[in-house]
Image 1: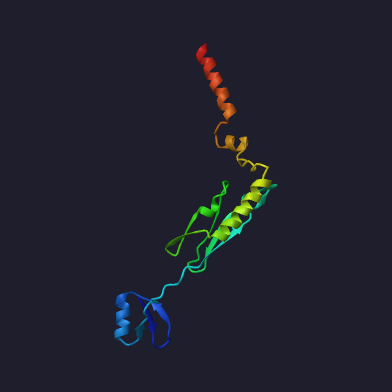
Image 2 (image 1 turned 60 degrees about the vertical axis):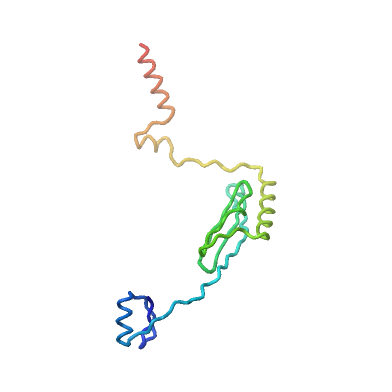
Length: 154
């Protein structure tokens, strides 16, 4: 429950029992919650794909709501980011027609010039890292298997 102190005008959230005591003593008044809820204000926009190592990633659809503070972005390698649902302010919305058309235009342009494939992720673990943890590489495991097979064949 929210109360407003009479002397200072300060508003505080307190439990109902404390609020009842303050109001009965004449030190505070009850503040009624705002009955009119704020209107959702979701804005969609297109985000061009970032460049990394000579490769441009696909564009994304961004959404931001100034009412609840929700921020999100959705990208797709299939061109379906504009179909994603955005949940905010207790409701679900989908991208508007204008932003969807803009996204599809960006995606078509990206698809036409994206002849390079996406760079392969390289593991941070080298053979030295694997050996330091006492694990064996695939080559070492194959060598051990051949050795055991030869030993069993004697």
